[in-house]
Image (cartoon, rainbow, N blue to C red; front, side, top):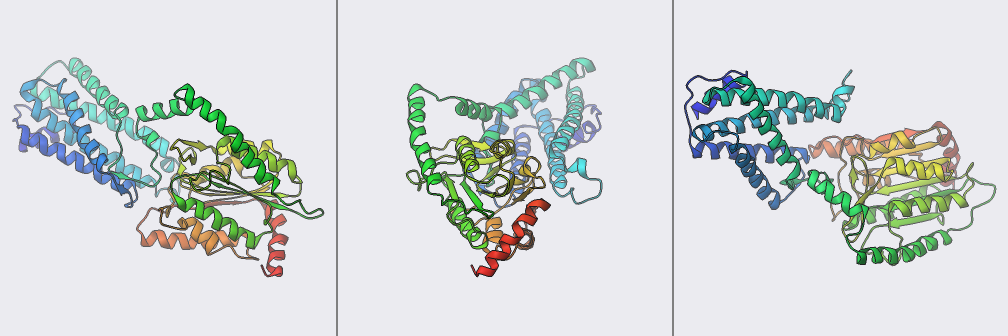
Amino acid sequence: MWSVIQVLLRASIWRRTPKPGFVGLPSLLACAGALVAVRIATQFLASGGQGDFNPYGLNAAIAWIALEIAVAAFFIKPAARATALSAMLILTILAEIAIDAVKFASTYASPLPGAEVLANGQVVSAALFAVVSLWWVGAMVAVLRSFAPQPLPKTLVRVAALWAALVAVSALVPHVPVFVARDFDVRSANLWEAALARLAASRPTDSAQARDASAGEQPQARLLQAEIAALTPRSKGATNVYALGINGWAGEDVFLKELDGGLSALSAALPISGHIVRLANSGETPQTLPPATPGSIDAAVKAIGKIIDKDDDILLVFMTSHGMRTGFGLRFPNGTVTELTPAALAAALDGAGIKNRVVIVSACFAGIFLPPVANDNSIVLTAADATHTSFGCAPERDWTYFGDAFFRQSVRPGRDFQHAFDNARVLIAGWELMDHAQPSNPQAHFGSALVAKLAPLFQTEQASGR
């Protein structure tokens, strides 16, 4: 391997190596194995050390490296192929370690003074990818010129084509991680998966599916109408509190259990009994509860908006599911996945004229809901900030970490949302510290007008002994 290391050291500073040695297939396989190991370790760290092992992901990681080697081989002359490919793999290891190290560091950067730019994940990713790609291209030019001295422009074109081919392989070939985080969405795996998901969401695959979807609209609408009709009349001369509970993710019962438990805890702290509408994506409730779709959520908000006193009453929206970086995850019993975006929720609330609203989002990346929803007449509580995951959504659990800390252990009659949230944050921080997990950093916004409006309601519930 000394020949590879010698070439690598000089190439890393864009210097070619005169009279380099050559290595064979065993060295190339060793370098490929090292790259697979680094990628697996990175995926494990990215999952917070709690990802589920996926054997298909291991197969994909090995096959992906093999494909990259096969593609790169077309750009390298046979005599130096094993040595040059070995150097390329080690350069890739160094590049990926640098990128991942800065990304991991950026997740802890927000508490530091002047770290706003570093904490912006998109800025970090774009800038780092550009810098490391430039370095990698220059290093590979030095590697190829070590074995086949050619004019610099010709070699530069060859390496640029090699880089573009490898980027295309990375983007287009389907794959999944070896360690799958709780919030993993296959649609984000690569461009191929994203395109398939977009096509599946935009139109039915055949006319039979279209007929099934059309036939399902009426029963779903009837279930929502039944939920609205079951609401007790609002009390005149008093501030009424209505609740919309949303379980977004079918297939994992922790969210349905958290929905029921959270609404029960809220009923003990605020007068919402008889004023609760539930939407649930669950195989257990298709005949009893309307599903949670972007359309049904909008329809439920509009229906409640027609009932309440828009100036005086309050709507509490509690949502629990997996979260995505762009929205609140909605997975239906048939496996279809979509999302409710923060803009869509804000538009539904504003469109229905609902002035006073409490929005509680128990999901990864839930902090994305603060900017569009928060104002002086709103309270927004989220299980995580916009760039971090939350924890505790395993199927055997009754609560997520946030649900347990906030609803089960902090919400009490007479205790307002700010004190309950502060207590929950302390509990969550302790649990994450014991689990060696990246802090989820729950977020909150307390609009002063709504805080003042809720204060007498909390006091009333405490005095009633509920």
